Image 1 (cartoon, rainbow, N blue to C red):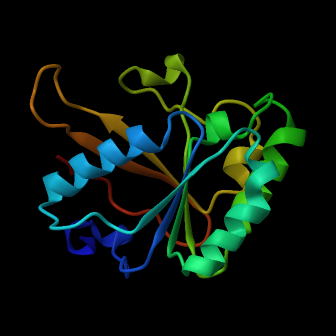
Image 2: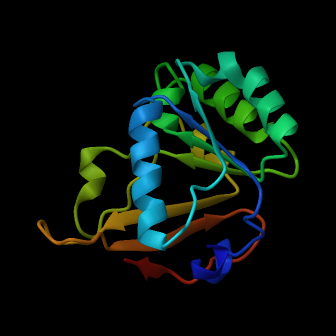
Length: 178
């Protein structure tokens, strides 16, 4: 449903997705995908190839790269960078190879890396960063901060998206999603 996306995210989303996860398993992710598809009113599940990643992500990068090429994937997701790095997040010997491997997932494939920030960055007005080495952010082409704005107990999730960094274009206007 690329038509539902705000302008900076509109693209041809008709190809397969490779989703790499270090936190859960295929059954959990399938359940989440079913809920998202139902919420979007999709008649069938999107073409998502799930790969469980045992950290560090860099050990499985060649296999993931070959899957992306084999499928002709248009999107690669690493969920999450925080866990997938598999080491001391303050160490450039962890962050640089991780970001280089993510960047090599195919020239025609968009890369989405999800990262958690520390508790100190969760307060109103805070400007959180990816935990650890600045190399995680230096290699990124764009950084978006996503905050959950919903009140507890509501039957929906409201998010606020703020574009914090762009290396090769201007910043996009922030937006909200429900």
